[in-house]
Image (cartoon, rainbow, N blue to C red; front, side, top):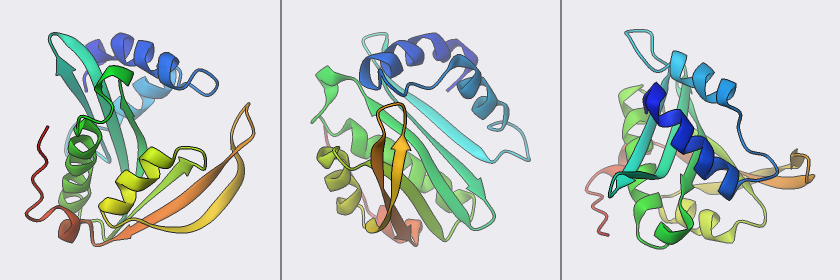
Length: 157
């Protein structure tokens, strides 16, 4: 992801997450940490026919990575794009030498939970009222050894 991707990403963000969409400043802040030798972030976009149809981001700290966001345009959901974005983030976690990857997922987002489970993530707890202002709980999931999850992974779609 580059600075010029922020506007189309924000459009997608507001469509998919109207109550708790990230701000322009949040994306700028994340991108500021994604370049150079001290980079601790990896943000990617997926495009189709000249438009952004998905994006994803990961933050790394020591041997722990945290998936910050994964989003897929409504007309692309079920196409395998989410799996491709997740694969890219897990490869980045491996490159950052992270041994574990964590994430929070809305408890009502069963489709995302199933995706994460296919990659080896396991639920480890909840964060009550994590998503605001809707006061929706988050399921906390963890993956140990992200390198093992993406070895030989080939996603079609």
